[in-house]
Amino acid sequence: MRAAVKPAAPGTAVTPQRYAYGDDPSQVADLYLPPSGAAARGVVVIIHGGYWRSTYGMELGVPLAQDLVRRGYACWNLEYRRAGNGGGWPATFDDVAAGIDRLAVAAAEHGLDLRSTTALGHSAGGHLAVWAAGRGSLPTGTPGAGVPVVPLTAVVSQAGVLNLGEARELGLSDDAVVNFLQGPEDPQRYRLADPMTAVPLGVAVYAVHGRKDSSVPLSQSASYVAAAQAAGATAELTTVPGDHFALITPGSRAWAAVVQLLETAADTTNPGPSSGD
Image 1: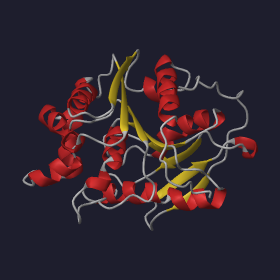
Image 2: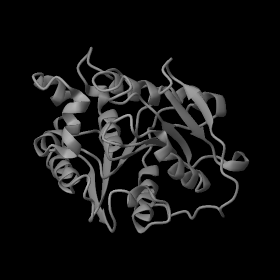
Image 3: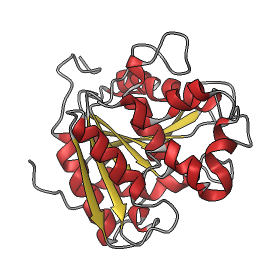
């Protein structure tokens, strides 16, 4: 495993380049490239949380992208339609799939190597990151199904909502799961959306969770990792000091653990050709 890389000295913020993958204002992603044309040590797809609601947006991923780009990563900060602005089932899933695949266009334009592409998702974004890593095995015709143009090689889930059945039973965040998926009479929809029903995945999932998280219970990460390990998948659980938001606060001990996990994930590569070839 590589030694953790310290960020470059703070300076002028990196200005991202925006890409659209649809006509809706939320169907966009921002590309952050390491300064001075340096080769990226890996690509990180950042998927923000907010219990899938439109109250929260891609601004949550900006501090993470700014920190990681100074560490030498290229970052793809992804926005998507959420419950309240046209999202939910099936639009959010279609958006995440299309938004990640759009990265191939940006990679071709900048000679960016996608053989190491890690999804980094916080809270509801952790759910979407793990879901995206398994979408290649979804039944034909379901939201997000199909062979990914940009395969993910690992996932780092930050306090991810990884057990939708439990989250629904607990009524987390004022019944956020039902608000997001609607159609409670459609159990197939809930199965297709739940990471628990997709184990084992073919990529490693590194779940990190704050020990004082009062927004997403630790059991959300622990139950997923236990199920994944029992199914023979590569999955690890790391608990860290702090609350739900410490994981997206650069400079915190929790964020340092996230960076270390990204270093581990960056060693995992897809053996196929790079986009820059």
